[in-house]
Structure formats: structure tokens, C-alpha cells
Image (cartoon, rainbow, N blue to C red):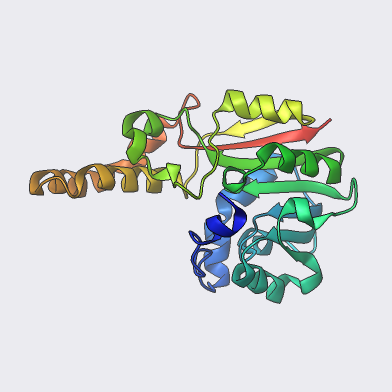
Length: 246
């Protein structure tokens, strides 16, 4: 599908409305915690598919020079209003043409799977990263227990917006082929995993029968602890990796 055709599947409010500062910090805590665990403490950072810039806004402006790339006009405008017009590029990473070796960190939070050219995007990220810089990628885990149980009902498939899906092995392969080496990974996500489990189970049960609807409702309090247990051993529904530019 072309970029224009795909755009029809992204409503103007896809990125969400304008939240409170407390909501931004809470909703982005998975991401900011992972950044800290990677011992990334400041520098020039680019968020690809930044939406309204919530992740960038959760970072300290004293430590980070924050930039974003976003194809959605409304979301990019919201990000630019807070972060500055000169810090937000409206378009794709490939179109942005940032200077070579000009960033310390490039992030793809739930963004790489939306692109038609993941390899080209990774090559461009490598070009603009300084040697030894970090790329952070978060994508659905196609080898997760949820993917295997729910198959076509798995919430994180999100067709047609998601163009590609990855497991750790093929993500590692494409990263190595484009000049990166993974040094940290996690398969836990407070924001995404239990939500995907709930929505997948709802799709499987809700419209089947009244007893199955009751099973779904009764299962809701158990979903978070069940997912936390099942997300061990690389089986969590969300995969987040940090890789160093070689």
C-alpha cells in the first residue's frame, strides 16, 4: 500500500488528545525507564514516529536536545507546538535528511512495524547516529505466547497499519545487517502487554455467547499477573531492544 492509502487508516485522533503532564510521565514510564536502564543520560535524541511528542516531552529538556519525525500533520503540529517547529520534521525519516552522525540516540517506539521500508529506515538511522550511538526499537513480538494462542485475533497484529512483524531472531538479523549490535532487551511492557491480552481475549470471546462473555469479564482481574508470568523467557507480547551503532 502507498503512504496515501495507509493514511486512510490513521484517523486524526490516532495519536490521542492533549493530556496532563502527569499522564505523559506515567504513560511514558516504560520508555523512560528503559532509557535509564541503558545508561543513556542525555544528548541529541530523535524519536521516529513521535506522534504528539509525548515520549520526548517526558524527557528532561536539561539533559536532552529533543527532535521528532512524524507523518501525521495534526500530531506533528501538536508536537511542534510544545517542542518547537525546528525540532519536528513533518514526513518520514527517509525524507528528513538529517546530517550524518548528528544524533546520540534514535528511537522507534511502536514505529518500525508501521513502515513499508524497515531496512531503509534502519540504514538511515545508522547514518545519522554517531559511532557508538544507540538505536531503541519497540515492536510487537511475533514469537510471543499471545501471538501463538490468538493467531489472527491477536490484537497487536493491527492490520493493515502494521506492515511487518518481528521476532528477536529476525530483528537481530536485520539490525546486524544494517550496522547495529543489540546490547539490551526486554519483553515486559506495563502499557502494551496486558492491554493486548485483554483486547485479544475480548475478540475471541465477547461475541460468541453469554457464558463466554462472562468468562472474559471474570478473567479481567487475572490478566496482569498472568501476563507478567507468561512474559518471561522472551515470550512477552512486546519486544524492546537497544542496539549500538558499530
